[in-house]
Amino acid sequence: MAQQAQHYAIFETAGGFCGIAWNTVGITRFQLPTSSAEGTERLLLRRVPDAEPASPSPDIALAIAAVKRYFAGEPIDFSDLALDLAGQDDFFRDIYAAARRLRWGETTTYGALAKELGHGPEAACDVGQAMAKNPVALIIPCHRVLAAGNKIGGFSAPGGSVSKARMLELEGVKLAPPKPVQQSLF
Image (cartoon, rainbow, N blue to C red; front, side, top):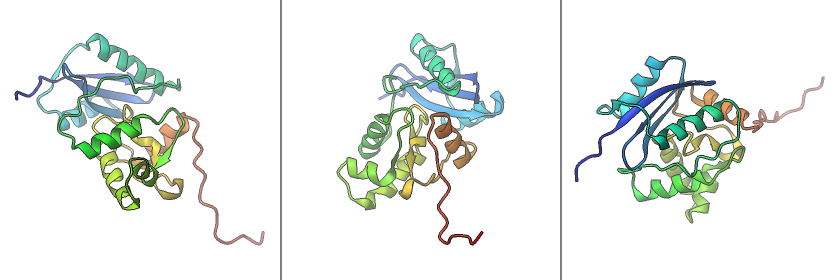
């Protein structure tokens, strides 16, 4: 089966420059913001080296507008955007489908997501791996999936866990610092 031609666009948001790649099936890759258009393009093209720059189709233009509104602080639901997750195994696709059901300001943990899919706590690591390999971060909201105890956990996007925390704060999620084990006398 021939691979679909891919196109991409780089665009500016209140959070920085984002990138999006697509084919006729749907969005294939999303690059979270960096500080420069060149940096975003470089990161995006590492993942989709054969993609060609193009003007967005009407559906992609709507996705770009939604991303811009998201980074401006507007609650956005990306669950209706068409994705092309070809190349992802079935378990990862199930994980991504479950993560897409998380709404603005809603979080879960790797373990809870594994349990929702009918797996034991040992599958929490698999959920974490799926989130780390998420090709369309934000659209599949991996930033809303936390480590055990609602700790921030990792984030493989530019800025790491700091970016994850900023996105959650944008959505109104308060991540409290861990409570001290011992109380101070003062």
